Image (cartoon, rainbow, N blue to C red):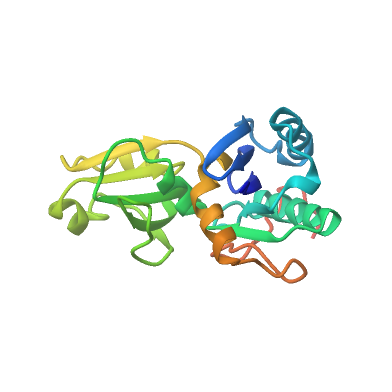
Amino acid sequence: MSERILMIETSTESCSVAVCDGKAILASRLDETPRQQSSMLVPYIVDVLREAGVESRDLDAVAVSEGPGSYTGLRVGVSTAKGYCFGAGKPLIGVDTLQILACQAEGSYGRIIAMIDARRMEVYAAPFDGSARKTGPTEAVILDADSYRKELDEGTVLFIGTGIRKFQDICHHPNASFQECPPMASAMAAPALAALQKKEFKDIAYFEPFYLKEFVAGVTKHAVL
C-alpha cells in the first residue's frame, strides 16, 4: 500500500520540499538562499511532484513543519500547505521542526539537542533521544558556556541545527559534538508517516504554527512616528 506524502519545510531561512512513499524519498528540493520561500515554494512543489511521478490525487496527506522557527517562514509554509489541502482535499499533518532536525542526526548518539537560531545568543531548543523521540519541552534558551553542562557531564551529546554555531564557539566540553544544518523536508518522512498511520491530522481551518514567541515587528530608523 502506498503512503505518499508531500512535505514542506520553511521554518528557517531555507526552503525545502520533498515527496515520500513510506520512508522512501521520491524527490526533494532544498534552497538555502535567505528569504526566498515565498517565490520558490510553489515551483518546488510542482518540480518534486513531477519528478516523483505523483499527481495531487495520488497523495495521502500534506505535511508541514509546524515550528518553532521564523514567523515569516512558518506563515509561508503553513498557508501554502493549508491551501494545497483545501484544493486537493487532502489531510494536513504538522511535524515539530526540532524533531525534523533530530531525524537528521548523523552517527549514533544517546542524546540529541536540536537548536534553531533565534536572536543574539538565544536559540529555540528541545532534547531528544537517539531515536529522535522528544524527551523534554521546547524552550527559548539563552546560551552561555555552562548551558547543558549537566547533560554533557553525563555523556556524549549531539547539538544539531542552525543554532549550533553560536554554541560551538563557547562550548568546549569534550562530550559535545556539533552538526550544523537546516531542517529539511526529506527528514520529515518518519514522523509524518507515523502521524498518517495514526490519523493524527490538523484542523485545516484553524491550525496555526507554533511560534514559541510572539512576532514583534521592528521599526526602521526612517519610520515616521
